[in-house]
Length: 420
Image 1 (cartoon, rainbow, N blue to C red):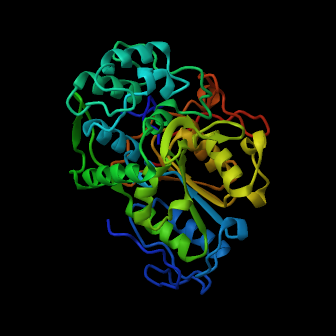
Image 2 (image 1 turned 90 degrees about the vertical axis):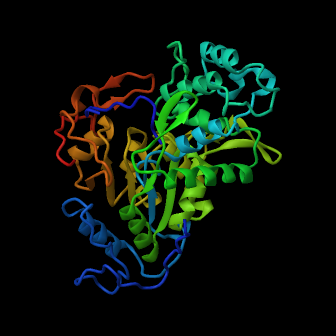
């Protein structure tokens, strides 16, 4: 999930069963018996990307075998928002909660308790807009009060207050996306089951909505629809049929992504999203820990969750790249927040082109020949100007940009946008 100011250069329902037996629909004539299902032919696949993925599956997979990565199965990891679906399920749920008055007044009316990264200016703006509308811990009437709703939207979507003050500060930009974290933190006070109900309702609304439609949230207009990518649904099913351990690693709230992922056969325990601590049965605003610090699955935080949760890494070592035998063989993403976990993949790396500078610099440089770029499957963005990899290709932890460098220290040259 990445919706806050991105570094872009362009203008710009029925559950699916996991397939475990052999299935020949869409199989290439030259597929060996080891590969029991191949990707369906589809014009959305660019160049030889489909054939390369099929070859990897045939080489590493085992038809019908079902094991976890810890037991030796090849691991495939997917980002969710704008990788598995077009648009953002975290945003869809956040806006549904505002329109249905499900965001609670924080303890003591103190908005600073909702995020350690919220600025004093943002906390004051939220208190001014929302204070007095509900008691501590009670749902705010954001479905009818546009001032409170608009302040929430401004802080979440633009990382600024309505008056233009910065909303978040003090975070590592390679490990935290504070707006996405805040959306998960504002689930506080509800149980996992209640959040699943909210996400289910938001999912239905956004799937039923007309493609390209907007919705009113407060007095603002926001994206109002989401669509699954049929090609990625097929890819997940094909990997599962061939014995891959398929997991989601997302910067949206884990209970929300679980609802959406179930429809493509991803079980709840195979979804890694933003986690917040519980107080009994209800969620709190406290971000869960990874690598010994408050964390979320964003960029380096995605590596941390994979290393810690799937491979047992402890402490700060979870942020370090693991040996080849303890890494995913395949990864797919679309944004700069996916750079680290996609780069860690050892066999193939699929990038959906949304004109994200750092990710596209890595993909087009393709130093080891394992990168694949594919246009977005629905409404692909236009061609980007050249990516300034040699000067602005790396997002620094403090917020600046620097030259992108390969592991040996050489600077990645600027790259043309060639697949769009």
